[in-house]
Image (cartoon, rainbow, N blue to C red; front, side):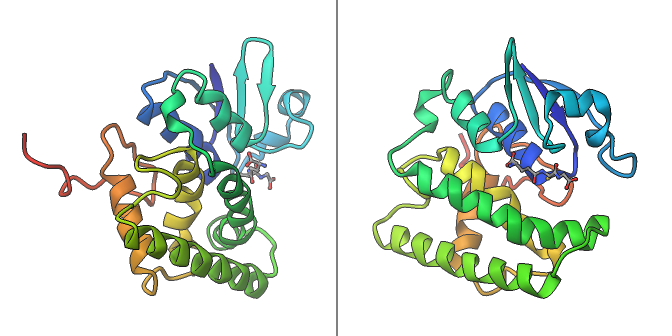
Length: 204
Ligand SMILES: N[C@@H](CCC(=O)N[C@@H](CS)C(=O)NCC(=O)O)C(=O)O
């Protein structure tokens, strides 16, 4: 499988992270998203007319939506799926439009109604915090199951990178605990802005 990838893209990182955590190998093709805007080149538009990254190519199949890619990767890793994932995949797409856009505004100088996207991001963080707090009352840490699923992978990057878009995570203790759990998973990989935690790993 080939992933057309940009190292600073939260959406590309979702796919790299899922592959790493589920032990699948991707051939990464780096696209100069910034400053060259190579994702808008004729070659890339032939693959994805929407001009976005990531793009996942598996033989003749070309996927251009990160939720579809995560679902596709569960074919070889069925344990990474659970009932209840779908609403969170949609929620993750909304996070990309709010927190993701706030980050692109701050980091890559994208045009955005910054007050509106930050406000939407805060509303969604409150919803995520409420859900994760309910889960903690039930003794669970992950979004939809007793183990991490593609719902967690989809929502994690833009949440963890929220401070890059000027949105603080200080007010969300359940989200911070959940992020620690994700960042401590065996096989977790970093991206610039999200580092790996080791201290939750139990000694052998
Ligand atoms: N629906 C897409 C959206 C991905 C997305 O927002 N990609 C951004 C980079 S993180 C992008 O390619 N933007 C293109 C542009 O704004 O020029 C997905 O989730 O896969």
